[in-house]
Image (cartoon, rainbow, N blue to C red; front, side, top):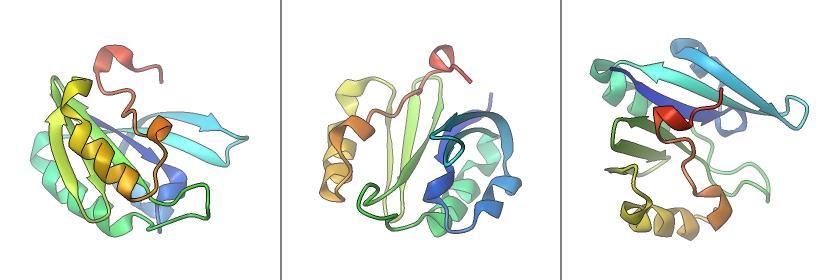
Length: 125
């Protein structure tokens, strides 16, 4: 079973990074200015994908986006990828405190640190 991930178009230095992934869904917000991509990554390619993603993540995008992250999930596993840090937790929010604290330390608002969706049954696109 593959990992699914959510990557925001504005988070990437080079948007062509998305062409290296299997995009299985997309959700457009703000008239296609902000696009969430759902990707599928085989377990054997996950570590390489995480490393490549970290190299591709922007540090900031103006005052509204002080930092970015992406996340991948499979079963009960949740992996949250920041530019300089990777957290491997569970899909249960009770395990997210360290991730949320790290994201907040980067200036990411709490409402943006929800890692949704993080279960296949919660996917809407």
